[in-house]
Length: 631
Image (cartoon, rainbow, N blue to C red; front, side, top):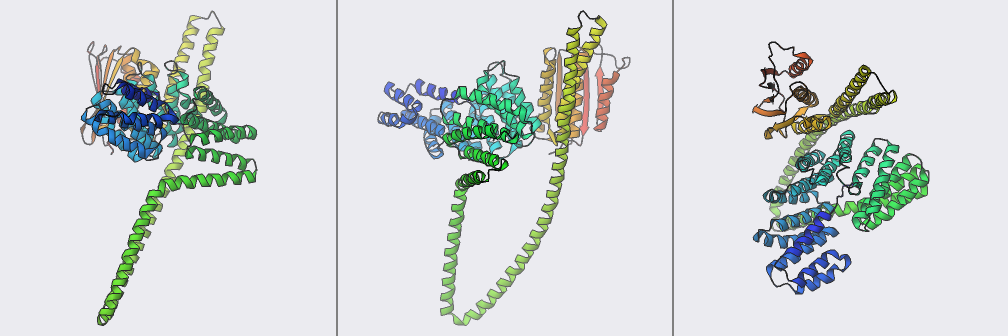
């Protein structure tokens, strides 16, 4: 299970600030609420003392607000919702947006902890307009990230990725002031891709967190080390994974404050370390790690974590041929899974029982009524019997029709399953090829770069022409690596969205450092954000835009490039790429391979290409594509 928890200090300090800064609270009442929130097991005593001092409606709301926060931290859903719903109307009346959004966030967190992911998502959506009204990008990031994580827990990974990327787009604009929000957004995207079995995409986003290490404290990103290790485990790269997991453990042990959250983290990390040792047949170390995980999981009070740990111990004893111990932990695992199942389905079972009891009562009443009618109207009983036979015959015929319909549906379902299995096999082949490209060709290209750098430093002084050739090889190889990464990314996509292409372009500019010289503006029509592209269409469009940016930076010497992606007609896409560079005369200039490649890609998409340019007046390219707008 991936680590999803993030620091709660932001909310702790925020809640204490609001308690302390409220002018409506008397000093004693204020101090008691502060102690109630921060004193843990003694909080009930301070709440009782504060309750006696309540004199106004505002004080009552502050009291309910503090209760809401405490029960949210404890994961007690009913009490969190009860006190939150008491406090919210007062804060709405006072137009206190800060406290409204804090209360809603506490309620959503509690719903998520209780597995009520649909309810948590609804509450987060209720809070988003408040964040917009507050003009708080920090809250917008946090709420979209919360929606992403809940969709992840709800196994709706495509929506989880969508809202994780929304959080990232907002966070990246304030990366200088708030890099940790970027980290949390990348984390949400990565874990969705991981459980979606899109492991290469997951690693791309988790490794981006590592690129921010110079901006943040490493102690804040222990969960990212675990996430990378967890994905590497699924890829069978156990030796690499071990280093990441051990680093996560060290960070978590330094941060350990003996809270439920800390125990949860350590239980996760030690369970992953135990699985690695089991897979590599290091059984003594596996047992040591897993029993450490067992202790932490029990302290975390998380049945999910306890179940994960029991499952890992069962696998260890099964593989190491310790049948009695394996059987013991299999029984414990069964019990904990049954407990989780019963908790999640108790309400559904209760509703089913109520419906059954109502049906039984209705059946008994119907039988008694029929009996009375038979006694009173004996002469009518034969008619009723005939009617009954007719009804039964009708029901049997209807049942047979339903059976035939069901059989047809089952045949259709088998066809769909066969199609899905074929698609899955194709996707597995694509993943295998992309991993081979990354692990073999990628490593070899990196070795070339290192070898060239070594030659430059080992043979000094060196002929200037030879040095130029080595620099050219180095630059070409780095460019090839970027192209290889783009190819791997494209191979892993069954389909793409316009938003994926936009994000990929931003990553390309950032990694190639093109934005240092040229400002690039990408305007994506809002109506296209949810539209899909096939991988063939997406890759060609990405290459077209990439080539345009390259030409504007390298050849046109432009400092501003505008890219507009619009939907002028329902079945038409228009790409407009315009720069303010030196321009050229298309009639006299040698257009070169770049423009020819652009025309070829547009032709492959059955589109129309036009170019307008003149000296010192920049260049404009228009591409019109049809029949690629998919719902």
